[in-house]
Image 1 (cartoon, one colour):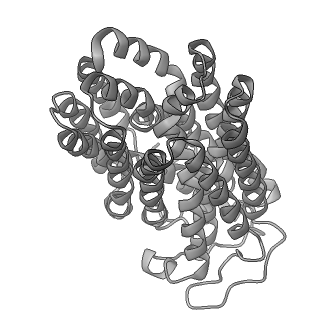
Image 2 (image 1 turned 45 degrees about the horizontal axis):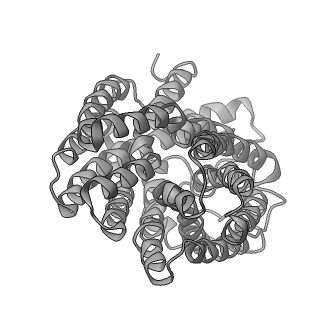
Length: 414
């Protein structure tokens, strides 16, 4: 049953639920940060460092959790990760200094990262024909999950404070994640071959080990582009409420933004995946990243206009969730499914550098310039650079390890 085609749909449902729950750590952070700075009197830079530590922990753990899951199966690392998610939030509720908050929230981030990477890998491994669509559906949970939680969390933070909110949230997260982790499994090694027997025209993908992958110029371009574009997405996760406050966005409009951004972010992952399955990963990335750069430029220049702010933030969400899907699917397309968890885990470490840009560095730019317009314009430039790096003229499917790359295709399809 667990190695059948039907069970993969159960796994997809479980992965979506897991992604929704763990997304609270990242995409509800702007609510936590606003409340913590107000109630504790800690500086924006101190609290912003906590977000950076979260991103570092959640990304740097993924190559190791990925190798463990590829070798021993996903269930044991997922159970351990679920415990860390709950324990980190629980310990953070007792933090008495910014340093303790960084430490405990980062500990929870280790669990978030492991669950995030393994959940993505389930789609890469079980759905090799439509990696874009399958990864997009799973990633929808991470992008849109907080749509269902943020209003409740905001009310809880206002009524009870951040410590009590963290305490009860930790118990709820652990209670939901542990049984879901028991469902996780990977297909047998011949799964993709069995599918290809039904479609003999489908060529086999070269299978790269992590050490072989990082030696290719394709992966090096992917890594740099991923880092730059994800910094833009994380800017909203870490600073959205403070940006809205600077631009004078009312409580009513900000409530609309709290719905619009995660909704757009979630659907972006499905739309980006579907479009890339037909148009090709590279062309889709070039289009999406260029438009996202225009959004960041518009927000930096005209964000003080309330409806411009709402519309641009929604469009940024509608474009900004797709990179997680596009790059994950590209890693599966280019480097194979056998080591997909470890390969994607190594690639997503770029998110750690992106977190440094979006968390600490953006806060530093605000402290120097006195406005959020400065980091927004810097991130617009990052988007345009990432778009240029995604051009099909630079990126093309590599051949088998040790051989030259294949000629540039019309579009990368899975």
